[in-house]
Image 1 (spheres, helix red, strand yellow):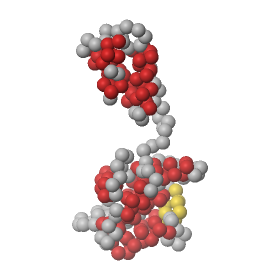
Image 2 (tube, helix red, strand yellow):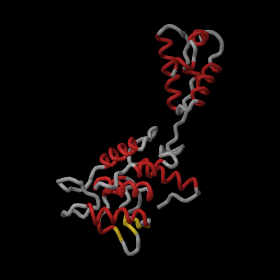
Image 3 (cartoon, one colour):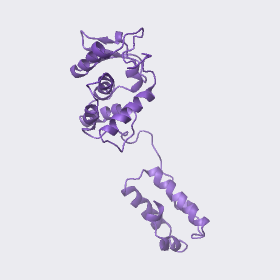
Image 4 (spheres, helix red, strand yellow):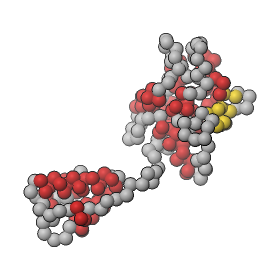
Length: 230
């Protein structure tokens, strides 16, 4: 990155003349190519140190290198691009029990914006079929909350429960498809699942964790000016 922004002759020229224009141009070019502010500043500092070590620059850059603020939650989180969720759902093999289970899980993640842990902790008692609601034990928030269960999500979950869910003592909704039929209990399992279906759908360039669905759901709500509070 550094070599592509400051030619060698320019680096040597920094031993004479003003530093600010050169460093400023370096930063602007890197930012125009999409590099995060913190990454750009780190590269500026590393470039300065490297070139002083190599003897190319004898002046101290630190007075002209800005210390940019990095505000938490200043931008939108990484999320799936438009239409990507449908491709990921289509990658589920719904002719197999595992695919139908995963399809129901991915629908809950994408359509309701649930977090991975919230999906894994759903129990059979949390689903109110008559009212079309589910009780979600929020991982971040004041406590359990009732949320509407969209018809397509309800059908997918009901189909899995009737046809594929193994019988056992656990009241958790989603279980392993092979013995021992224990509840899925680690969010890392969902992250691996999401990564697999994203690869099958040919989608990359975003994080593969289950949270990309909840982040995408939140971004969609922002685009249609809907509140994010649940």
